Image 1 (cartoon, helix red, strand yellow):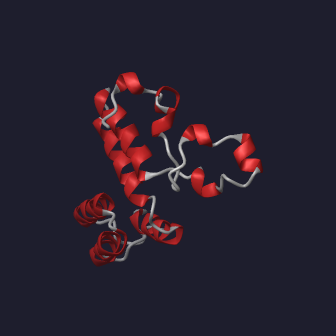
Image 2: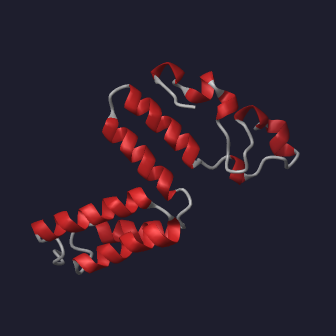
Length: 139
């Protein structure tokens, strides 16, 4: 299903379409279900589908850059936190020693984590950092 501006907020207008990582729909996430142990933290984690739905709404209201950010975030849902933090650190100006460092991270994102949009973003950053000389440690 593609979402539009009239579907926002999705959780209020389509609660049955909002699902956690284990597939439990929002109406199934109740205090009683938590107390019974039927709801776990996995049921509360954001999913790539939820982020893609937010991207649909953002694009529908003329916010294509925000939509792209939601889609990149969707790529990161399944990436381990330590890998995300390593990528973040490398993307800080002056932290990567060379373009190769960033290209290696992009390759890791693409091949090991199927995070194509993030890999493309890091490759684009590598080109910009090279043009602007941001590989030299500045601190």
